[in-house]
Image (cartoon, rainbow, N blue to C red; front, side, top):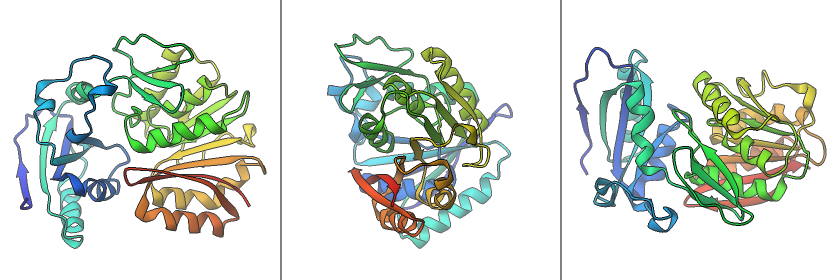
Length: 317
């Protein structure tokens, strides 16, 4: 499609601005990677990914079922005064450099509408062998041995539907042992720390730089009835509680560049048996992340991929 730039009118009561980039479905990974430069919290509309088998009989909005499955959209949300013009200019420049044809639109949306508009896409989903992520507002008849994790991610990343989250949860099932200590850096909705606790981990510490994500994660932790999971604000590892080190499992479901930035400092929170579960890495950047880990005294013990995304299990060499 030709690249276009559309600006929609919004009222003076708008609290957030949505920047939405639409492109051909086969370009979704490239578009997502560029949008990740703006924010780690993306709303992805990929209608080809609607799978009736995962919906457990629930109804999906007819507009979604009839949508054009050859295109996809990625949105970020900024405060109404959050430098929208500069952000759009940056995105247009990056997409021009990469020769990616896109349509960019911006529109206003109030906080309540944003927090609820995506719910039509979010249905129960099974991840790994036992974990089932269930929206807080949905009913689900659990099967024997199911581990139910109820989530209301609100405006934070982490519903369990994205490949990066699914990859880490699959690895958590392998590496979580009873009573171990877990650290989740960039926790979003708190989904990984909650899953770790449900799998039998002991003390679970979750951190995010975004106070909104921390608020959402704390609400999810409270609703899960878990007393061994806490969440606080931290810029990567700067405010992490070192009193609980070594952490036996460290989750970092963020992006390649941030994982690379964190790598030189993470070893002080580990022992020889600790494992880092790093995700949010597009396959094209995996070699860069691996090279950084190896340069800092780590070794890759497992690699998992799904739909162009990569997750790594990493230990001290």
